Length: 93
Image (cartoon, helix red, strand yellow):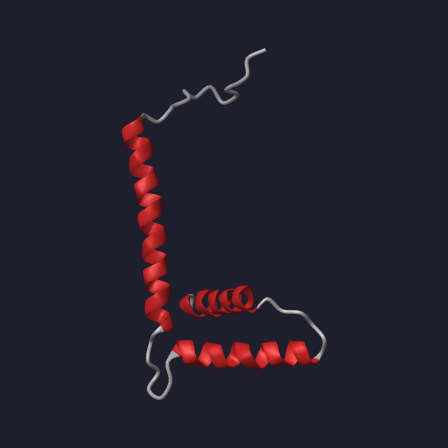
């Protein structure tokens, strides 16, 4: 039995190193651009407050409430997830 069975009768293409490196570079560029876009959003000035400051205040309040109610919170991952959630929900609008 063959290890790679092609059931749709289409040829199987393997990427050469040039294309493999090209796609890897494109993935890295997209990742870097997403990080730049996120940082630009994070440091956006809303007039009297910067988004980063608002997120820090919000996360501090939520973490304090959770700790007061007896929950254990890893602050850094919580802040990162909260910021990402708000960013992706606000970016779609």
